[in-house]
Image (cartoon, rainbow, N blue to C red; front, top):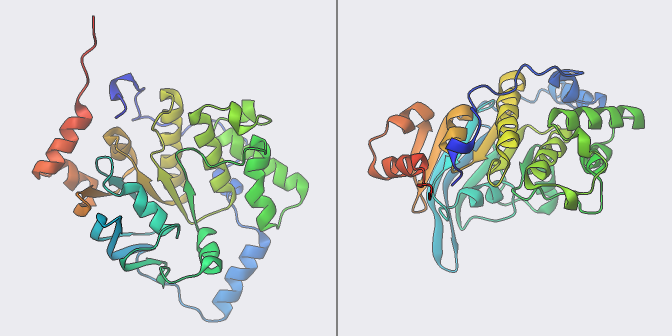
Length: 299
């Protein structure tokens, strides 16, 4: 676990930093996307009013070892869910199931009311335009510069001329504090910088949901503070829906609306962050106590 005593105060994210343009401008939809929305409205399609993300009785095993066992939870629009638990309890597996990289043995997973577990790769590509993931290692293209990594989803989506595209890329890179490495290749970047660039690239695809897999693990404390502040800012200013896998309660306390606590493959707790912190459950108390533990320093 990270040592919270070595980290700067995360209570005050960098929400007031001056920016050349607002997040509204950075993340605005293209004219093509606006036309698609208008066409759907004209066709009389009613928006789905249930949870944006829903897991229902999901189970998966590896080599006959249960990883998730009958797990159910949901995420509302504009909500941030933190998935907590010790190593090996299925936190990251939950994200990979949602992205379609894994298929559950039992249960169903839906995005905006659409069941996704039976979708083929083409169907999942459509889902991944709406739900994007920031991996621990960044998962950047090694042969592309930071600038071209962030530009990649914009080029794929189209709708912007080259000048507009490059302007948005630079603004996104500034947003995550990577402007000084814009021409660098990923191999030359620290873990924290890779993750920051990965967030910029994720935002470039204009998703509805962003999944973060241990965003502050193995990251410089200053970068960790900025990443946490950015997750908060996207929720507060843009109403982003997020799922954050973390073992760090300091992160969860700053960003979570709801918590899913996995213990032994089961959903031991699902509900508001306040209820989790106040829980008298023995396993939750042990987890919270472990997170607060600071190893002694040799003298």
